[in-house]
Length: 113
Image (cartoon, rainbow, N blue to C red; front, side):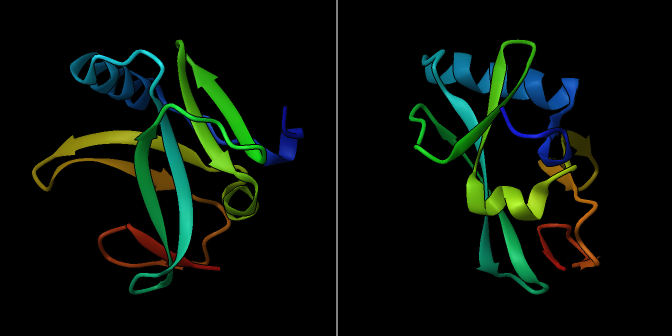
């Protein structure tokens, strides 16, 4: 378990969405994987995928039976963040509220530190 200052929270809305995706995919082992990669319009970008494999350096966070997994390197840039699932006029998407980001792009999918 990561130290308290390296926690990432999954909101109830995000947990419900991942549970729906697991059901529609027919695989109850699927977890939401959040990763950071270089690029995007602000320097780093968020990547979301469904995964049923844990890697050696993965941190696992759980809410309502749903798991969020983040590799150790990405966790350095995500500590204290919250992952939400939002449905609005712009569409439906996972959104990261990241306290480590000094700025982000207009669409919210990339950030800088």
